[in-house]
Length: 260
Image 1 (cartoon, rainbow, N blue to C red):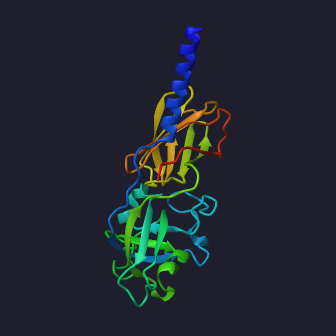
Image 2 (image 1 turned 45 degrees about the vertical axis):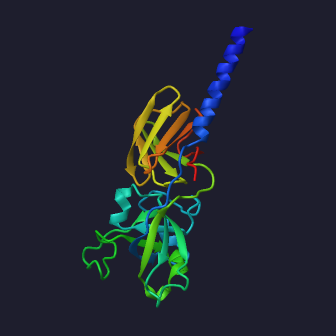
Image 3 (image 1 turned 30 degrees about the vertical axis):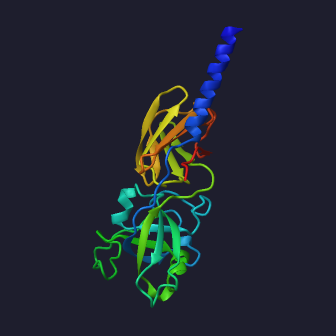
């Protein structure tokens, strides 16, 4: 009886520790300082032209990003590592075009605004380095400025991403090639490091393929999977055994999100 009691206590402690690891991620993402940039718009009145993009999110409506999105210039895009980051933006110092009261918008980085070296930085080459620039989905631009402005000066800052539900992991690829798209990330929003663990293997680091698509060349089929991700604020979230052993390519699974 004594041995059985000890085993029961140890099992409960193990469950409590697992729940604590999954349920509590210390710290919250803090807002950054206000900085200056410029903003334009693209994608049409319904933002249909913003779908897809260099972050790999695909259909921004079904992924939950909607029209609250922007393409970032080279100076902000960070070669794709800024995908998923959230910004607060407001029109600044242009009373002719800015809406009264300088309302602010919240957007998620979902695309890249490429440079146009054929045009000068201050006349058409808005996304050329080293300019910080936001090419907003058109509906978002119209919330802060008049359509006729075309381009306006803005103030911006990094803010915590507030997302509904958990981090989503979509597994694509084939037997020897696993490409995991990571979306709906709260907190810092961006992911700078990702790892995967099969039920018959140790933790394995994944390499970033493009945008927020992370790659593993291990054979993972037939195993339940866990994921561990780290944001740019160095906080880490571990989602234990969220993928059952009978998973198939093309499926999406939901893990533990960061606390905001």
